[in-house]
Image 1 (cartoon, rainbow, N blue to C red):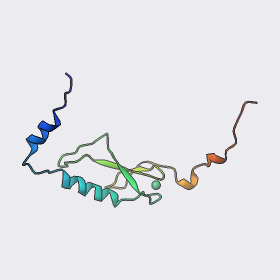
Image 2 (cartoon, rainbow, N blue to C red):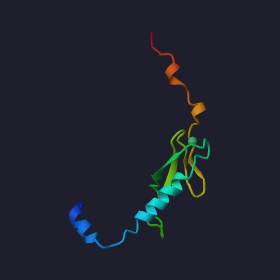
Image 3 (cartoon, rainbow, N blue to C red):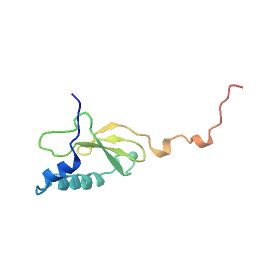
Image 4 (tube, helix red, strand yellow):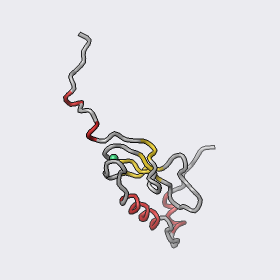
Length: 104
Ligand SMILES: [Zn+2]
């Protein structure tokens, strides 16, 4: 069976007059995620949909984990549990000063 998307104009017409229940929840999620910082370096993070459990009962929007934009640490925002440790910026090797290795 092949998935065939519905005509967007037809969808808009069907939704006319109905209240959006997702817009407020999405804005609430964005505000919540924006208020969280990396547990290691304190930098800003971006939400990534948790692909293992994207939807949970009673929640209208996908569940997200947060990934630090500086060190890459991935963590669960509600509990702070680190899923994948990142590398702090002061520990990243400076490859711009590395010598070129040749076989000669
Ligand atoms: Zn970080």
